Structures are given as C-alpha cells and as structure tokens.
Length: 73
Image (cartoon, rainbow, N blue to C red; front, side):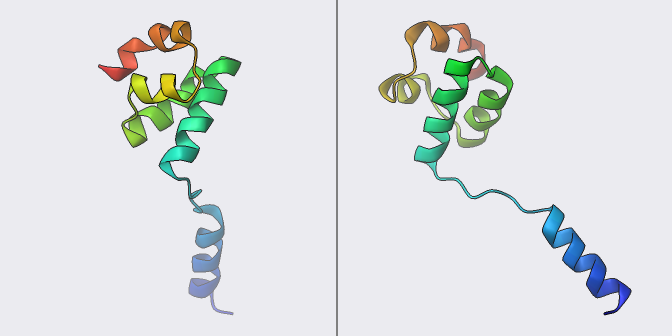
C-alpha cells in the first residue's frame, strides 16, 4: 500500500464523528447534567441548539437548568 493510501486510512480511523440524534443528545445532556458534567453537556446544548424547555421535559431538574441558564441566552 502506498503512503498516500495509508495516510487516508489512518485519517479515517482517527477522524470518526459519532452519529447522534437530537433525542439522543437531549438524553445525553440530561444525564451529564445530573452527574455534574456541565462542560460535556454544554457542547451538545450549543451544537443542537437545545432549549431549557426541552431539557426540563426530558427529566432534567429545574435547579440544574437554572444553574446553566447563561448557556441558553
């Protein structure tokens, strides 16, 4: 195998993006907020443009959502 093809294969292995649906992102955010991982939750909130209402309907506690209200504005 040539150097170019080997480089392309290595890049494909290392640059894999996870596929996640909006519902999956919401449940992931709710789980992370309950664990206290705000940085991980913030990434998905901003990527999907999630609202506080969506998180509250999915089971996030009101206190947790209010604590991160600056992310939603």
